[in-house]
Image (cartoon, rainbow, N blue to C red; front, side, top):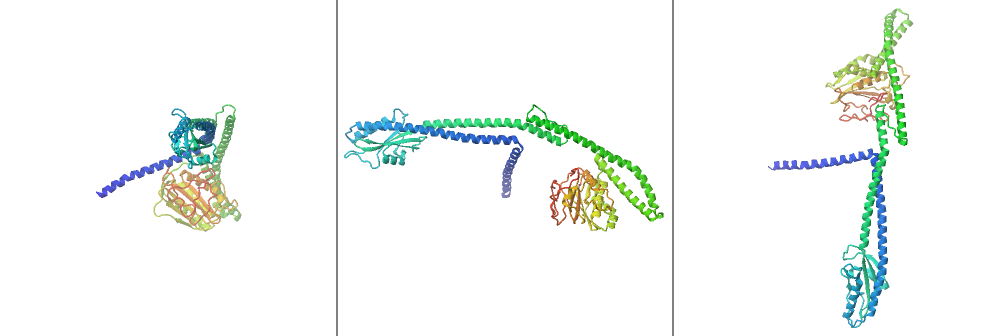
Length: 581
């Protein structure tokens, strides 16, 4: 039972944790959404910034005006209080001087009557009055001292000690702004002076003027300024939103049209209204788009003519080349009966005819790619078997060049749905280039596979490539060293065709190179047709190398397991001349 209870407790606690995690995730998502909205909306930034600045200005101006009004009201109240207190003190002294009390009780009665008269009639008296004896005061001989008198709600403690000391010291009228200890809810002005009471001597007379009316006026001004300032900020924000919408909307329209234009919709145009700056922008944009459409149309027509020319020439040359090749074979077979010069000429003729035939085949293949007529015929194939067939095919060439081909492959099958003819052609091109430029050093062919992809790497240790040369490796007819002797008779289109074959498989063809240390080409294809690549089981940068790859063109990184393994920095994919990944 205890175990069951513990399990229930854990199960009960788990949802609370998951709810907290969901709340945190929602908050993070909301924060990221607001940040994206802030970064992506110029109108939002302008409206928010203008509203914030307007709010700051309204607060600053309102605070200044409120302080100025409050100070003015207090200063006016102080001037009036001083004059009123002076008149009241003079009246009180006149009453004291005109009276001749006989006993201490009469003196106290006189003081009480004067204080009541000075307060004013009714519950809403104009001022509070306090008649206080100095700490060291003494009455006439034989007279009892008069007690301190104060209006209702006031006490001697309400009079600040500094004010009392100033009144006793100077003997003239003094004033101070203070908060009463009785808690009237408003600050008060306290005006003090001295009077002489018959048979009791000198006394301190204080008048208390509450600033309740001024406080109500200040509160009304504060409310008015706050409401007006808020309305002003809302108005500024609304006007800013309207103005920025009028300004930003054409810009957004232009950005959308530009994006569609960049996406290939060359007939996109902006609406032209009026003759203002935006109308001129729309007219300029439309003119640019029309010129671009015309220029791209001419380039497309030129490209179609060029492709058609290459295709037609290749097809037209095929028939005479076949006849010339037949004649060349006859001469080549009969070269033993020729003199040495004629026999050598027959051999050279046959060699060049073979190169010419290879060039025509490559041109026809390129024309099929350009025309979009190349089709994939995939079948499940063990890539290891394809690699061994290509190695056997190039064994004679490698032997003539003095190179040894070393194959490393896993024991288990590396099956993928590929077009065997095209993959073999890619591998022949890669291995042929390695033999050609490997400088009689060993060539390493590595096969690797994982759950998502199969990869084949061809590594030579020859002349290599500089980082600046890597982006042009797959360009048509491009050579790293144009002066290098073509001992194998390459057409200059092998790697371009290999890139097109790789693209048909939705794969990737990448290269790493270092001058004097060779090159490493890696072909990666998905194991199933239409399945996106999620990893590369073979690193492009060889083990032990930290070659910088900043000169390589930018590309997407590999997600999933196996990304960038092998001890080197993961290079970005090298693209062909047309930007193919």
